[in-house]
Length: 194
Image (cartoon, rainbow, N blue to C red):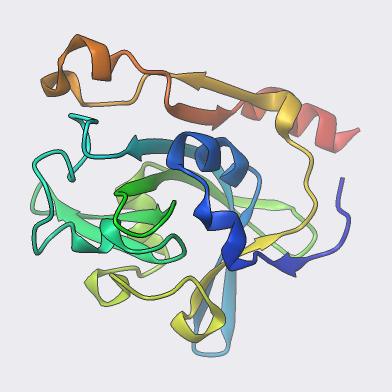
């Protein structure tokens, strides 16, 4: 299932979020803390797309909080919610077009893809990986100590999609968009073990 490991290039982040979000499933989020590297297989994402998306932070225009979303794709957008959780997002698309993908869930793995720990929920993921506001606006690169790698893991046949979570306030049209993408874990792990 693996075909080598490489850092994801900046060009891949220039697509709009509904196209980038499923592509991020199966990629590896790498967090470097000191000399230690933690590898997290991304298993769930959500797309937030443009000024028209009423579930997006950018719906009411550019603010101090969301200005990173208006940058060219390839940066981290990190914000605080519920007075308790940091949310990690990949900024995507061209400059001045607010588009981002929330990383909702992942599995901590070793270098051989052995599953070590399920990080179920975006706040649990950021807490475990020690991600906070200091990453907001940074480029997705080795220099930020937080980047993405492609290990050649084939997951396309195991990706499902559904409605985004917790956005009923956005109205029926936007809350019903199938812009949440997730890995069918049971099928994926069964295939991986064979």
